[in-house]
Amino acid sequence: MSRLSLGERERSQLLKSEDVSRSLRRISHEILERNSKSLDELALVGVMTRGVPLARRVAANLRKLEGLDVPVGSLDITMHRDDRDGEEPEVGESFVPFDVTGKTVVLVDDVLFTGRTARAAMDALLELGRPAAVRLAILVDRGHRELPIRADHVGKNAPTAFDERVIVSLEETDGEDAVIVVGN
Figure (cartoon, rainbow, N blue to C red):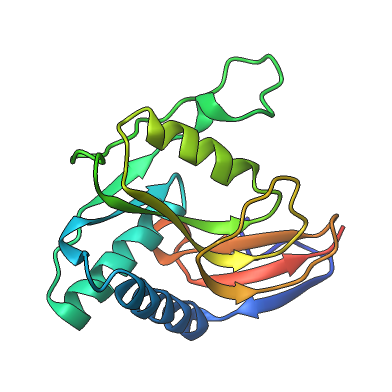
């Protein structure tokens, strides 16, 4: 079953493929504007799994817009999560092929919900060094924060009910670009 064929559950499409692309272009422009004085110290780190292809797309946009080759890394945050329930987690491998110390690092992820994933990502990133600044770029901000975390760059604000799910599908991981909201 694909991520978008969820049977009879109530669902609504939040973003189509072209909306995802447009949102990522807007985020890319915002990153350029906010970091115009220090573009040579800019780096992107995608939060595994779907944040990684999003970070790569933003980097491609920055290359296309400004000719910048911004380094991109991937971050597994499994061991930094506060919601592990005793089972041995499946840990992926982070790959950050550059020193984050002194850089402006933009963490990229697909959905911002409670803020716990973003907190875990910051913890994992800070184990690698001391960035000059850490910013957060999110494709969809759905609200319901449990921690005082706010995204610096947002593709789409989408107020949702707490018990709904926001499902992001990307070409690289799922064979198509789309974002849907699924009710329970």
